[in-house]
Image (cartoon, rainbow, N blue to C red; front, side):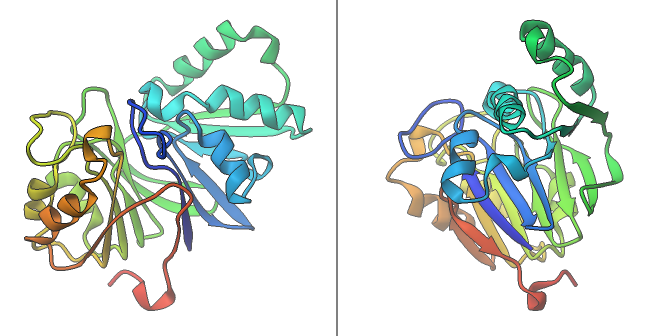
Length: 250
């Protein structure tokens, strides 16, 4: 399995990190998780292309996770694509309907399927997925894919997310601010490392970075690594990571 980080930033621009978006899978099955501002451009720059993204899975509905959703659908329509599936937490159907209320000319341009999911197990785009609720200011879900990859969504440090990730080859986790920034609804490095100290994870990639983290990326890594024994890295836009067969979950 491959994952490509399209956007590793957050709601405030940094200049080099676009808003949240990750593509997982390979050519025969691809899934976009979140679609923040800039993700449409990153899909083009990555070589993956927006044309291949017929399924989007949302963690939640904050703007920095959904701002490019309608632009993505419009680009796919203009390119002649005919289907789109959007899946997300409760109220996703209402959210999508409101988008089409605003952009009414986009109605009926293609075959659109919208699904809502709750914590628990479901299947999507060829992936087996497990979901848990996170700790955030808006209802948000973390997801584990094929028992190998976990993506936290936006969250404070959460035992539910740590339990979900246990045994994963890779955990992609919100680490929005350095330790010296007082914040709620997001994780900071030292507390994240403490949470993961006894969790079996091969690699942790830190994402959803606010401008406060610029130039302090090594501090984020060191803060997590002080307690977490696995590999810790800061994710970058357009970085591609592969989970090899030897990294399969235990």
